[in-house]
Amino acid sequence: MGTKERRERERQEVRALILDAARELFATAGYEAVTMRMVAEKIEYSPTSIYLHFRDKQQLVQEICEHDFCSLAAAFQRIALVADPVERVRQIGLAYVDFARAYPHHYRLMFMMPTPPKAPGEVCHERGNPEQDAYAFLRLTIEQVQAAGRLRPELEDIDLVTQMCWAAVHGVISLHLAKGADPWVEWRSISVTAEALIDSLNRGMFLPPVTTGAH
Amino acid sequence: MGTKERRERERQEVRALILDAARELFATAGYEAVTMRMVAEKIEYSPTSIYLHFRDKQQLVQEICEHDFCSLAAAFQRIALVADPVERVRQIGLAYVDFARAYPHHYRLMFMMPTPPKAPGEVCHERGNPEQDAYAFLRLTIEQVQAAGRLRPELEDIDLVTQMCWAAVHGVISLHLAKGADPWVEWRSISVTAEALIDSLNRGMFLPPVTTGAH
DNA sequence: ATATGTAGATTAACAGTGTTTACAAAAGGA
DNA sequence: TCCTTTTGTAAACACTGTTAATCTACATAT
Image (cartoon, rainbow over all chains, first blue to last red):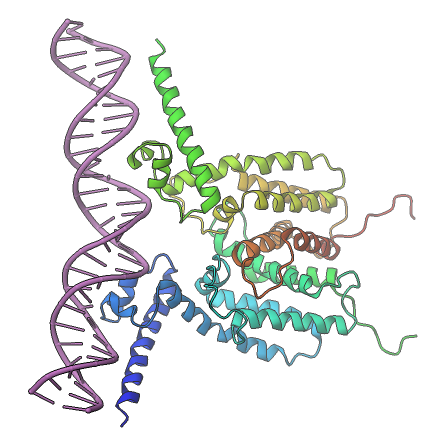
């Protein structure tokens, strides 16, 4: 009989209810401002009920973030079609910025808060983790830049170059998310700053394309 | 009679006691992990006493950070002596990294947490604010790069260039402070990454020195 | 010397947090 | 009908930052 299946389905429905309510709250107010009691009240359950589905607040918010990171992965899928690897690096940076602008609170949670020291038992090298995948995707693209002979020869450490690119774009985003409200700096927009930085960095790291047919 | 002066002196002593105790705690454990009760216990006063000297936790930690930022300002004083403005930009970046490595929790508090929306009455454009001064110092140096004809002509917006430089270095630091413990990336050290990024960015933003005497 | 005012420090409490324990109620299986 | 498992909750716990009320010590004024 399908009673077991139905029970499981109902369980997942409540779980989804929690996730949706929490997503909306976290996305508009941020981690600290949202309390478990708020989430509970929004779905008209008791606060304790949340703990039947999620270990703690941290796990709840993490699940939301990981889910929403799919939109970033989708953007990356599209970028994979771009032929020129140097242009692809550029596009990755811009997509990263777009994601941060669309989900600033998610971005803050994923990349601006210290990672909790994973319980030693937990699996670390799982695939499908979007953060990890994004890094791998960028790294692969940089490798292809190198393979195309477009990477400056002194930049031989692929991981280093990957981290340089990531850090540069991350810097623009995180600086704006943290300090963008400060009035004593005439802030340029995230997009403008990020694009200018990506372009300057490209010029400093990559080489112009070799024109085939030249002697 | 000097009783008033003595009282005031005693008051400042207690205030300094609080600041020292709080500095040590915040520096080793970070903002959230330190409670007012911990600070109070460390100096053997009641928690309430702290509020006789500081409006709230936020103001306490802010005062500590602003004070310790003097060491960054001191480093900048030394850099001001370097002749080549392009090299000066480089040195500013490296000093910034050194500061972040020496005071990671301070850095986190000053640059990685959203600035509280200042009460409208508060003075905003005070001088002596180290954050503000650091920005002004970097901006001035970039202006001097431009004056020396070493800035690429398409980069005409000085504030934009300043923010690009700041964001790049900040990105390396903040990414490490937030994600440096994650095991699924083979992290290069902050110093190595920052230096490589600064160098690549220099190549992409600045021009080689014009050799005098050439036609 | 005695009363007064005041600044410093403390105790107790408030309103909130994330989380746990103990208990109730409902529902499926025997 | 009884039993077990699941689902939900009220109450409590151990905290947090912060405040109100109180007490104490001391410089000053009478």
